[in-house]
Length: 371
Ligand code: DP6
Image (cartoon, rainbow, N blue to C red; front, side, top):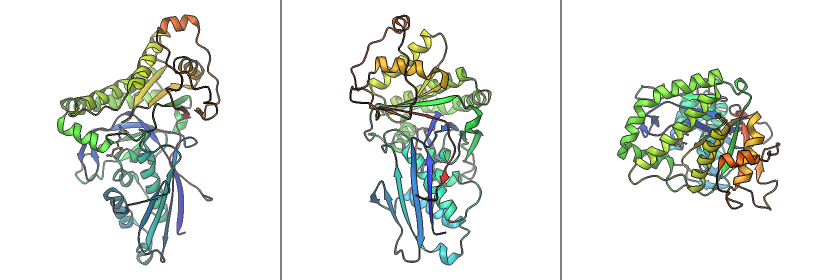
């Protein structure tokens, strides 16, 4: 088989990776934990093909040819060709790679994670590689190692200088916590100004708070793993929000500061806390990657009420109909006057949220026969 097509999921960290101890090998300064998202709404799709007729290696991303000499890409290709089980005559054939996302690139939606996980999984099948592939995906983009596996996933920072033990492992499969839902609130789909790589380099060089964070994440990671295993939503949610807040505090503590969230992001944070206070329970958690878009974690039973509150305070544009809510089969429940009084928040003008993506925890990369 000379062609393989694969689709791979996005993952959203609940304990963030931020900081590298080795920039070339992409080795992190702490463990991180994420949920792999179902691929219905968000995925990367990659086809890889080798042929004796190809004159050179080439790559197309979202229909545009890109530089194959990109160092991270070359790192992945080198490792794969080294581990290849194909006869050496075929191993020398040149490769063409074609990859697409079904969502905006670089909008803080972990596009590079899905992209490199997909590329690695496709290459692994083409070159008949067995065993862990998360280390290969990691050398493309750190967070990509977590997208090579489904469910809740932990990326162990490892201690080996060569990075052999810096790999991702499943904590539990998606089926372990079937009630968990994810709502991505897209505030902006513009390209972020400071990439994660540049941002975390800046934090490593200038943030004192990051040094504090590095010491305390190990304890938090273990608590998070426990909360996931025990399906303890309250602890899961509180740890998720605290970690997101600390990560963005580190970004602000960097010099010059990396400001990823905007006023709408902050309003969503206020809304979540007000809502949890008003219902006297922790029903929703937010987390933000290196961008302004919010990812909310919540349980299925609470979705109608939360959608109702979001619709009330962030009303969609009148013409935002089917396109606005992606993957959401449930209608919101209008909040009661009593709840609105308790929330005591200002309504935003229509159209502040571009769209919502509703999804759940899902499986790892999948091969497809008829691309
Ligand atoms: C904020 O994996 O994109 O999303 O390793 O330099 O490619 P590189 O960075 P990347 O960083 C992701 C950072 C984050 C947190 C996370 O996903 O854990």
